[in-house]
Length: 280
Image (cartoon, rainbow, N blue to C red; front, side, top):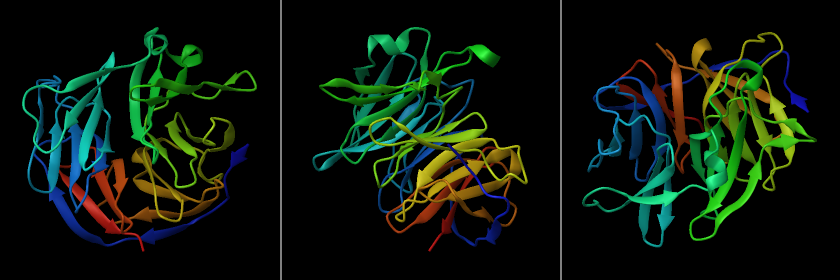
């Protein structure tokens, strides 16, 4: 099912605050709590799993590894989970000592595939998107839903024997349990069991759509960054485009996350600042 509309209103939003970090080329951004965020950037000179640190202040976790991130609860503590090519790495909070512990990925997910995105479900399960590193017609992706201590709960790969994903990247769970994935030229949304609900391919009046960061607000609207068009799409839980978001000097929005008050955090690819917008 393709979900799209002809036109949409552009809403100009005000930046209510900014959070500074040291380097450009942000790859992932996740909300922690109390206005704090976790940041991952690409730095080819320092992109090692050991170049990650827990901090005090508005940035609680910072990595130059360029890995995808999620933030999950473990009782009263919280864990930061990020990926390398063969496993998920888990940092315990408050401040960890030494390197993180490892959470191996299922063996079948490593057959030419590597993790490209990671998200956390309300149940505590982890969503991980994968890509096979092939190009053009051979490019394929899949999504695993995992539980620590249990392993793979299920896999999403195809709908009616047709591949669902080309190169999935950012991934999140909506408040209604839907799994929302940024893919090549589309946002692919399945239900909580992995069955396709719809594919959002942007407005018909503007066929070029290049989605990256994705998150969902308290109304179950899906918010996705369109980095190359310098805007953010807001679509409802049925895949209908509600409006675009823009703000002053917006340039290459790459990563998104949202807090409990529906404040939207935007990480721009070429900036050293996270912009915070009030959606409601």
